[in-house]
Amino acid sequence: MSVASNALSSNHSAQPQTFEIRPFSGAVGAEIIGLDLAKPVNAEDFSLIHHAHLEHHVLVLRDQRISPEQQIAFSRRFGQLQIHVLKQFLLKGHPEILIVSNIVENGHNIGLGDAGKFWHSDLSYKELPSLGSMLHAQELPSEGGDTLFADMHKAWDAVPQALRKQVEGRSAAHSYTARYAETKFEGNWRPTLSAEQLAQVQEVIHPVVRTHPENGRKALFVSEGFTTRIVGLPDDESRDVLQQLYALSVLEQNIYRHQWQPHDLVFWDNRSLIHLATGCPAHLRRKLFRTTIQGDAPF
Image (cartoon, rainbow, N blue to C red):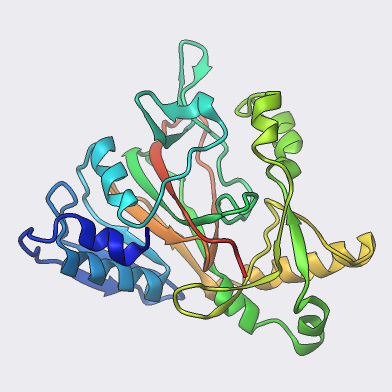
């Protein structure tokens, strides 16, 4: 079901809410003040949110005191939800929610503590990568824990002509396990993947440059977190080209740094952005709930 039909399928008779969409002064992003997702959102208000998401790529919905059920319901209005392969870290009773957390209880990690350690677009390692992700703050540290977002449309705009000729029309391989062993070695957050889990994250091939299905804009679609090689290029050339693309992807002027506030719900477009978690001191607790909306096959 499309975003438009999802919007019209429920809450069409709800009363309008009064809220403000305030663009940030930097590269991307806007905050929404006054919207309450604990209340019904009618089709007209939903349309405003949808268009703001397409325009600004990352929305910060402030002060959302909502339940997991309400986060799931709002996320579903944008499309089908994807269940993360690390079932160990899914919220009990709500498998649509991945727990992102460094908290240890009874000797066990309650969530994925090193999520976002490398720049990436969520689930680019799937045949149908994510349209967008919503991350809702549950418990925040007193310092650290920022999330960075980089605009991949502007990254493509910055690619020099000679490099464009090398990558236009080419595809790249994406793999969930690309950095998994390295990350697992560096910390104790990553469980060993079972044969069943490995079967869910087989290598996929996507265009190096994708077209946004809703606005038609071109964007780079590679990342250090999940991209392993450019198909058809010798290994050395592939590594060199990818390193150049990665550098162009994270130019400082194209990055928004989100400093979390209590009850923030951040909704970003994985077709337009890559993101990175900066981490926080290990002794400070951090917990967030993530829902992930399925997108289309990149083209």
